[in-house]
Length: 302
Ligand SMILES: [Zn+2]
Image 1 (cartoon, rainbow, N blue to C red):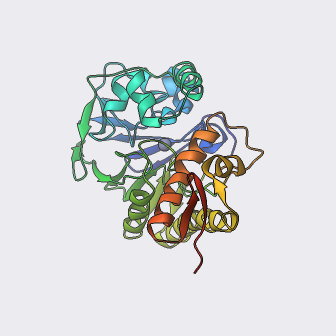
Image 2: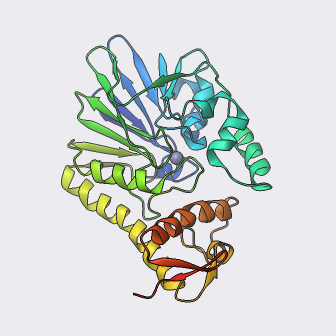
Image 3: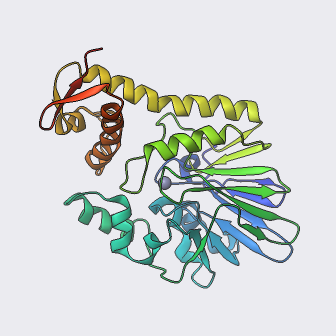
């Protein structure tokens, strides 16, 4: 591994691995070649880094969702139609709409705006087209079926590629980091429903966008999926332990449950706040956590 322009073929499907095997901010892009059309899914920084002759051709560009690392190379295909799930479609229409999707407060919002433009080549495409779960792209001898898998973003989708029997899992990336639901347009409980339905996915190959790469076989997939899903319960368990003493959301954010204290991530505080507020809200609904003074929370006596 570690070759800069590594790729792997699965019939009509080719995976173009990004640097460090697609570890964020890089990612693994996918091309599907049919007799009548070629499609690229999630053009990443890895495609930008390749010489033009080594990039896949595309008659259209599909996106699993509207996030910076998944459209970072889409500008390489200005003449092709770009597609997103209709729920994520507003995000590609303008920089402001994209920043609303993340929902980070200032001053993170302005710094992040600069990053998505300069580092991830954000290019507004108000003419991008929407798809829905169940939609099919026929490429001639190969087809791509959309499976709506929300939670990470509202429109996050899987793609099933036939006849290669490969499912694109995108940011259900099976990493040890675990599920990311830290944006304004993320939803913890949608993510959990998506993880539950992912257990029913049957395929030979499972392709993740980040460094886990392509997994062969349902058994290996399910094992990783369980470990990935368990991170949610682990964050919640650690939050409950922390709430043995009364704490404010600001203290929870500073303590860090999603990132590690030493992780230098510019938007970490925003992600911690959005992620852990969702845990807090549902623990409160379930009667497991109580607000003892305004803005201070503690576990409820059982
Ligand atoms: Zn994402």
